[in-house]
Image 1 (cartoon, one colour):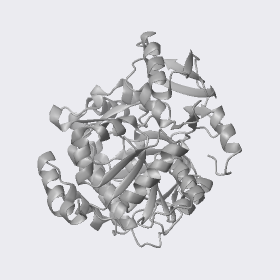
Image 2 (cartoon, rainbow, N blue to C red):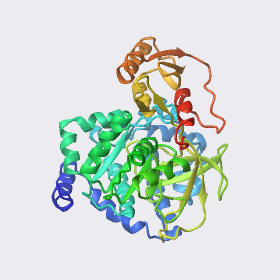
Image 3 (cartoon, rainbow, N blue to C red):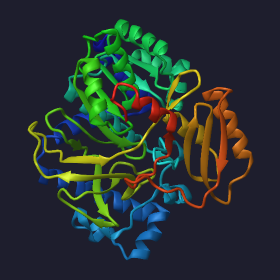
Image 4 (cartoon, rainbow, N blue to C red):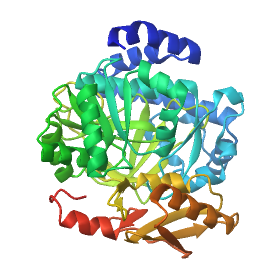
Length: 459
């Protein structure tokens, strides 16, 4: 499928079928990225006040919260006024999901989604169509920074089973064909499998490769080992996990092109990304309001704080001041690229490990998130790989927890990781964070040892 045909025929037809406004949203965001910082703050304030007015009229959770804190949306004059409200946690979202849903929308307006569970807390939430259009537009605006145009070929080294399952559906296979998207499984990273991926990539000739940092790293190492090149590439996008300097260097050498890091989460969608002109990331300020907190106290400048965010477009399930579990800080300088979108830096991101199985197969730890999806009674979990065949899963239980959940998890572990892999369960009263303060939901002692004797580009 040629890019021209996709742009002129497939995209308009797709928008008509799904009643979308992607092209309108993209045109709007393309203009707004060049606004000066003060104009962008004014735009954020307008969108925030509109969202707050919606919350006080139509969202039961915020109707109660505003009354409790004496918060009047009509009196909001600055973005800083939002700090009068307490942050929203993942546990709040889990326990109050129904009350966070807007009462003035119909069921067709709610698009179900789920987070990647990178902090060990799996969450389900809803977006509306307008929010999804703006999220897709922000992502494509970013791809244009790299030189990608709609319809250019993309390859995704992806590990989320829900996306990989959908990619195998006939309707999704047709959709991906018409959109020039190729999915490669980041949960199967043996040398033989990656060699197959390299052969596929050389035939497919993508303009861009997007993927989990760990999956990209393994592919890049194999490219270097075989002395192969992908001359069609204009860039590589790393997402979903922290990109250490060592991994970035290997990925750039292996793919022979620049790596652009992207930061976001399912609940907020893309939050910030690199343009290539700065070591920092541009915030999608026209879609998302980002704050940094220290013990719930707002911080500014280069002071590091916990990242909280508000999606300014999600009217189906507004999440005000949502805790992301990551640390970062604002960057006051302007980017040489000339865009007015503010800069930020993520200093402590999500911690992923790779599980190494008895067969030598390496599995991205995100797969474990999806094994844990949908089980009631689990507030938080942490999984430790003691040996190639032995896992220990620590679970913080809620009153809804039943022992049947354990049998289903054990069955899923063996189905996805192999019949030789067993799992034991522990039920502590608390799961301690790592020294960085992050909840490390996966820790592989096997992977740590393997990386120590590898190329030196470990996590």
